[in-house]
Length: 79
Image (cartoon, rainbow, N blue to C red; front, side, top):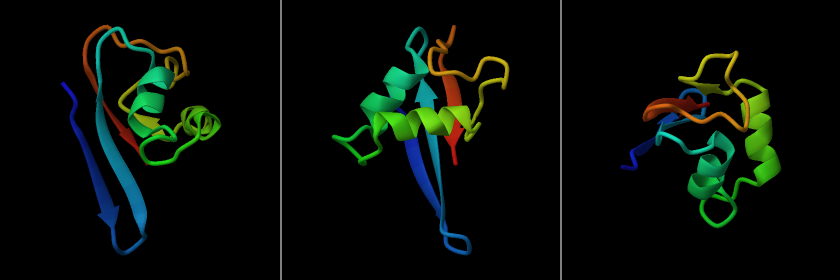
């Protein structure tokens, strides 16, 4: 089940994206499918930088890496 929402904070023009990472799917592959060049234009390297910079919440810092796979569906937020 895909759930995503884009919120725009007009005061700061910051974009916040809420997604649900399905169980058993690699974080980097999921983000590439949802936000990759064919959709909103984020390159794979940009997505990897978002992960490395800790701009994804909902996953513990210890586990936050491109190869992360959720054991169950997990709500994540990208800022």
